[in-house]
Length: 605
Image (tube, rainbow, N blue to C red):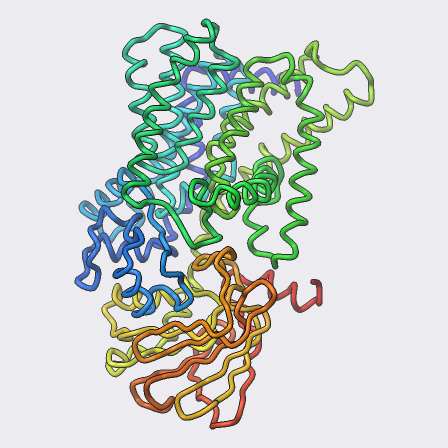
């Protein structure tokens, strides 16, 4: 019975229609995305794409609306779109115009139908899986292990978020065109197709215009030149030059037109701060590989307190060590295994610029699943690279079982739940913002939020959602502190408050999004906004502000100010204390801080 099942599976994996079948399978596993609607960044993208009068940015600038213009930055900070602690040289802009065009088409054809927008994303995902299957067959032949690699890639749960989240569609396009680049490159180098010689760098350019992740294709191309190309060394390297020129041209445009990031620790700039990026790479790469090779998502490293990050890092290093031990004999014997390993490693470089998350692993998974498939083939068929000692053979057989359980059982089982999980994760944000008053008076008031646990989704998004719902929204947003720490608020005089917090304003999942640790504050530093001044009174040893004074231009009871505090899952009215008195607000936790709340509650550091 088992032998028949294995024979049937191998026959299925070499079927001519396997690319289409796996594309359908991948889409079926992510179909729950059709019912999640718009989530997180989607709301801001929707506001920009619909061209509301309050938004002056062109729809195609949806990923690059802020490129560091000082006047625009001052306006963003003054209105509260960015927090008051945003540095004056802050920049957050991505060169993703092709992805923006795909979104613009959605809003031209079905602007009020998120299900159809998600179906559009799933079509791109289906194309990505089909092309990946073709690439595996190009490099491994029409074999059952090539089919296994493609199957593993198609059911990888790490791919669910890019397929299910509209704002992350850019990753699908970037990797699709990147794989088409590799596929065309192989057709050129092995079959002599002059058409594919021209198409390969074009596909790379399209990938780079879709998302920065496409840079990883260059790493796979270099791995191809090193291990798969049979030509002389000069011809191998010369074949990669057109692609390198495309990347150089893209990078030149990227820098000269002020794309990229600066002033944030969530994103690292590999060119502007190479030392910081190098440190981030060695910190994040093991966590990313943990997310790729194990059932533990890389995202979890962000959900836990900072002190727990190194536990995930250690687990990632352990995965790297074990993988090296088991895969080294295969890599020594197989040129394609060396290609997968080096390509996978190189593809970690561009995504290490972002905080670790499984949604970044589309290119990493391409090499990882190729390695897994070759490893499984070797163990099952008793390849000559297999160790002769019985203990080693048993260990490698156990590794095959563990990999099969992780990637062929657990991954497809959890994928539908992950696809739908964006809805229950995003709904609390919508409910929290619904707790913000939207009576007509607020349009002429400054909304003062004392202690939101997160700035981006629980403060910045207030205006976005209110505008989309056609409701009044505050003229300006003022946030005293953000993060999960308890806050002590003391009234100094009729218009001033002293605020103390235990863990500075950088707590929470996205705490370092708007200011880097390489730009510490100093006591006495002042931030001037319309109607409010913030002065840093005290910082900790690392330059993180823990005490500051907020001075308003009017008494705190002035009707031009509307005061709210975070309580449990939403905002409630806040009454400033009388002069000389204090009030202590307990730790505030947002939708993403469930783990942090329980962690703190157990007393674990």
